[in-house]
Image (tube, rainbow, N blue to C red; front, top):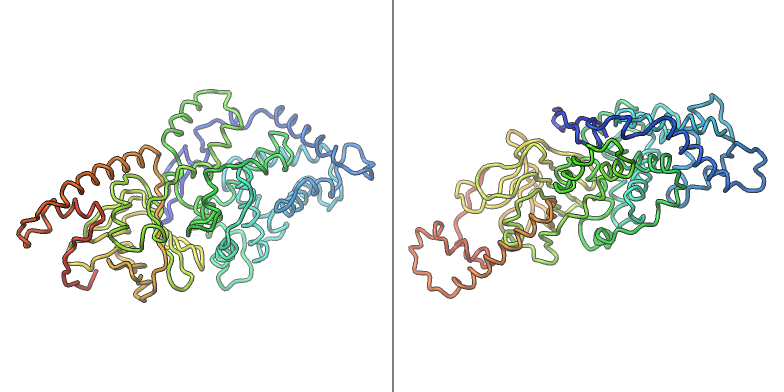
Length: 478
């Protein structure tokens, strides 16, 4: 929601598009004070209608009435939000809030135009007014933020079998050996590891306050395109998808066709809250992610990996699961390419997801995919030049070296994050390659073995998934 995107090596670049940034005027996006007041009064009246018979104070809401409007996983947030709104308008802890206090507190919430102000507000909310978070506070913050993001994105609440461990790993990454986290510590952590943690939270609150909607009205709309993420079939889970969207740049979640539509709509001074929410809620954009490679389905081998991911010319998310409950995510903003040099642009990131969630390296080339050079071991290298090599996957795909320690490789999967036409182009390229493979598979290859690496037939057969690699001695190094 801010107008700057923070790069994780301490650099910032101006980005008016980023998370609902500054290209839109506050007056056109957030509406007039009169509109906000009317919406807040209407919501207050709807809440007042749910009060039980014991509510003998017209024009006021009891704490119980307010909190009971929040069901299931949202109930804790209702408790925290009531306390925060009362705290904004009075110095004492009151069991009732008046219509005037409710409207005033709601207006203050709607003035949180940028992420820094939102971070401060929601930190205080989840800390229950303290100057620090406990680990229990932080875990509640993560779970509620996840829940509200799903609700704001019109996705039914669910958690995969590994999501509880994931959220606990996020908290562990936040606190380390400490038992408390101050606001300054939280800002430092979030800037690097989760700068958009409260994006979905504020989207949800904004929809409730300006749309005069009860919380239950945002909880049940299905998005079937995303159901595959919650079936525990893949390394990717819904919780992991959400956590990634709080840190990865928009190049992985933003559809270019949608971007053109949004630029057109920005010219409309009557831009409404629905357009704003759809622009800010990143998770909805992830419907376009396409499964390119799944080792469980396609086989854990270099040839199958190459076959399924080659010719995809868009950003990708690769998940690597290995011994020790380790899961790493490689976010690449550039297409994969073979060679002895590193690749990846300023939006490239290497993230440890489990057992601790943290951004390891980012901003620049950090991947090498060597298939042919005899000067390097064949395989995939992950790590920036001048820093420790984090992961190395040998060409046999039978293990992974984690900071030089050999571990069993369990699973790999890659998701294409580009627009749908990028995958369509890959499919067409694969169809052409298959035809060429069928034409050439039966040809007698009368070639000089010394020039086999340069022969086009070798590449064509590899496209078709046929192993034609000669065994060369592997040189160590990198």
